[in-house]
Image (cartoon, rainbow over the protein chains, first blue to last red):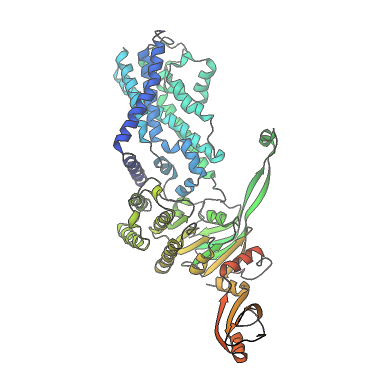
Length: 269
Length: 340
């Protein structure tokens, strides 16, 4: 295990180095990404300025939940790049996955190390800036627990999104093509998690509570941290389920992944 | 000696779905999918012994790749037994692949965006190659395969020949006991082919690495392999020495003679005249019916000649004839394993 991990870090380090081969162009790309992604929030903020608040949440409060979600998704998109089913599907189709199977190393770590998209730093920075802006605007009752809970929440979100990527990657063993419908949960999920979820219709909320438990990773915890009243009247403990949901999702995803790998068969040519 | 590869009644079938046509075809497909069962590999058996360099040939779609993929553990057989190095490849993947190497001519095992030096360094870690072994092999292979000129270039920037040389180096770095080479010379020019063949011969002789070589290029086989397996339509048609195959099916040989004077009808027993051009006459004869030396004796006792030449039909032609005319079907020849 230690050997595998050191190999993984080496793979990642080499990729980072090769992506930093042209530093100026890399930095410009990251800044460009930050600005483009951030513009969505600016548009939202301008719209919101006509209404004062959205579902009882101020701009600062939405910035808090929006920023943390963007930050986590960006982190996940970087760390789990190898499982991005847009890249993993072609990898299976072109037989590159076969090549990984011919190496005496844990296959999950190899896929994890097969790709590391450093320019996701743009989205991470954007999320961080929006999050910090939100922090500066809100007045919450800060306790030590709440301060510690923020990074835990972000890590849980990373695991949550990562699980969706792993599940998506696994489906490509059978479909060979990416399943567009999965984007509803990954990219759509991250959109929905960026807003106070009680503003959405009940049907959507139910999907993102019971099918994909996204609500436990953004809305409930944020209600707790910001001290908002919850029109959904969810029990208080729901605010603290985020790490458990994140870990449970990852375990389920990994189990599905291993099932997929075990049943994977190459083509005949 | 124990065989390193043991294949017994190995079979692999694929389901090929027959799609419904027409406007609602896609919809009907969801509920009613008919398929044909294609026997890609149909109960084949063979053994390969340590240190052998065996050629595995056959026309397109004969079942070569399917066999190799079962041997490397990428495909699970439908039926039959298969042990390599004492492992069942698809069951014990991680342990099994430590001691094998594989080169697939069509795709690379190297990291696309990394310079070769980085790729080799990663392989050293992946296979836990001891420093001494690594530097010894690395320096040796670098020299034979002339890798130094493009060591710093990312793999995506290499030519096909360069990439193939790099892939070969990568497959042998960890001193595997067995290496699968699937079309290692495909699409390469004569010089590159030659260099790769020299490398393969060298490794096989010096390190006694067992090599199973799949190829379309018969000249690879005739230059490298003692023994060949021929597969077609999923069945092994021939298993034995290439020479034996050629003398059985080599068919016609060509004798071309320059006579010292003009003969109106220079007949020879056991040979036919196929072409005449002044004093130059070309005969053909069957390898099986008469030997070249007898023919030449006969020739020199009857006529005055100034020059002569005996040629075999090119191997490619023979093999093509074997495929096309299905000469090996219903032929008991060479079905048994040669004793080793």
